[in-house]
Image 1 (cartoon, rainbow, N blue to C red):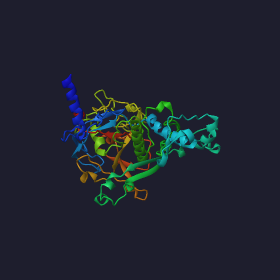
Image 2 (image 1 turned 180 degrees about the horizontal axis):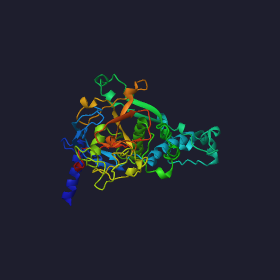
Image 3 (image 1 turned 90 degrees about the vertical axis):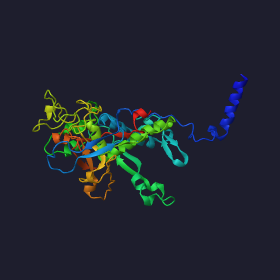
Length: 420
């Protein structure tokens, strides 16, 4: 017992001298143990290299892609395209944040010099007599109501969000200490987040799609269908909101925050779409759009326009058809998907082969050609060529279409899961 007491006393003495490191280089002690859990609804895509570009002949002679070897770091990707119901959580959050600020009082928490933040624990009583008059500001004025229905004025669902322009901060002229205010790299935007439901009509002439306009986004029948009518900017805003939603929860529980959610780069998207099957023209591996039984393997425009021949008409549920070998659904067909990259026909000639990425933050004053963003995967209204993993296309970042959706990715922190 006497020896144990002596040993215990010696341990305390050594711990108090030099922080317990005995003068050795042992790193900062007491750090949190870290294990990266899989984000809900996402799948792990391992690091790897692949041959990016066309796996078949360039039928339209677009000359926008060429074969090249590219290496991609591990990341997580949404199992499906973001659905109507998932995007509606974002819209409802924006709506409720506006309501909290209108009501004030216990709905806001005083942060002192940092201003106020929303008290999400306080419930909004939409039918409460004391709140109705204040919250009326969020509804359509009576003169704009159809059959006197009390509906939200979605034109007011504006989301204020921020991001850091790391590329601008990394420029040598901006890295000189003491000469640049860091706040200049923090960018701000205010954006309406409600999808453009009229896209089902304005995308087509002489085509009756009115029922999709009135029902597709809000009706429970379409909850598990991919959200459409979302611009590239709205998709990016969703990713930023999703990041803050999770990190706010982690901070509240005194846990370490995670990497940002974002849109996939073009090289990440194609790598994930191939499902580990290099040189395969389609996500399912074969060179054809049908299986051995003659059934189509994706939702697109087969043959000469028999939209129903593949089991769809417009878009279908996000979990339709068989997933690829990574477990990702509808990487070909259903809806095209936004990527992070700006579109440049010659970008394969100058971008790096390590995590290939071509990013350009277009300004409102820029020419339309500078506002193009890469879309991938093809959609329910496209022919089979656009379903190929190596086919590139584009749309303008401030437009919304009834055939374009998106899914998110998140960087994996570390080399591989085996590291943990």
